Image (cartoon, rainbow, N blue to C red; front, side, top):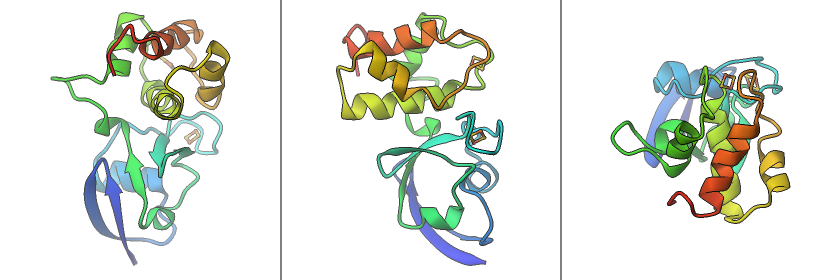
Length: 156
Ligand code: FES
Ligand code: FES
């Protein structure tokens, strides 16, 4: 077991973890943050997306020990049922959520884009979610939901 300390959604977390434990399993099993999900387990689908030190990462490909000292944001760090993040509101309003399995990863990829580039082009939006697969929506509504926030039609 190895001790790690990291920031998760603005809170300091200290834990003892197995050296081979993936960040995805640490977040879900130890911290009970269930927004990041396992899809492929191989870095292909993006359902396990989190933001780590300002970069979108697939938490299925990262060991929890690699997150020692890092700053992690999961979907639980954005909004809650009383106060949704503008991207969450916009996804609902645009019908960009169907089964919802891809949604946490999509929203985190979009958030990371808008944090760095508040007024992206449609192409930049499409590129930002290119690592997030969605089997339900056909992507168009997702892109429109992100565009609405980028264009200030939803507050941020
Ligand atoms: S579960 Fe991590 S990329 Fe698919
Ligand atoms: S809403 Fe079902 S996978 Fe995207």
